[in-house]
Length: 195
Image 1 (spheres, one colour):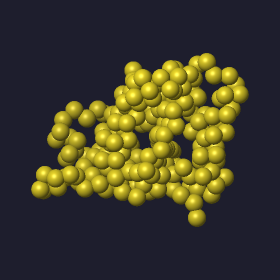
Image 2 (cartoon, rainbow, N blue to C red):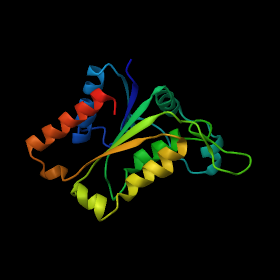
Image 3 (spheres, rainbow, N blue to C red):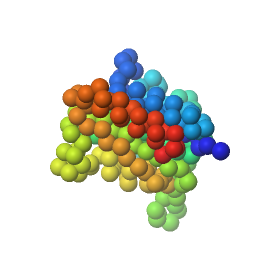
């Protein structure tokens, strides 16, 4: 029996298809070929406000779009989060989405003792796929993949999600058609394996 896989497309532009959308499509095709069940969340097409207060984050009622995303994430065994690197990090709309969806009571639970929060999403794994204009090795070795490490450790691990695997795809603008095809094949292979 296959996995339940939620693909979270974090590209902020819903009006045009980008390479990240093609990567997500190939992952989904591979997953379906591997007898996994796939649901998608397209962050750019969702309507939700920015969280501006601690009170709203902890006790506010999430909008329906966020409740539906929480239902999909709760259903999933494995999350695939794709986004382009913008100014060294994830686009603002994806960060706003994660703040909305990974709320106390859904993703973690504060402890009365004040100790480490209880992780409520334990048992789920994830893959983060980042596309960028710079070469991948520059992001990893010169910029130390700072935003990627933050998402893995400070967000996903904090909620109990792990292991978290990563795919960094650099030099997007200068890729040949063969290089693009190779990455699409790789995403299809990962999808089929449910990784």
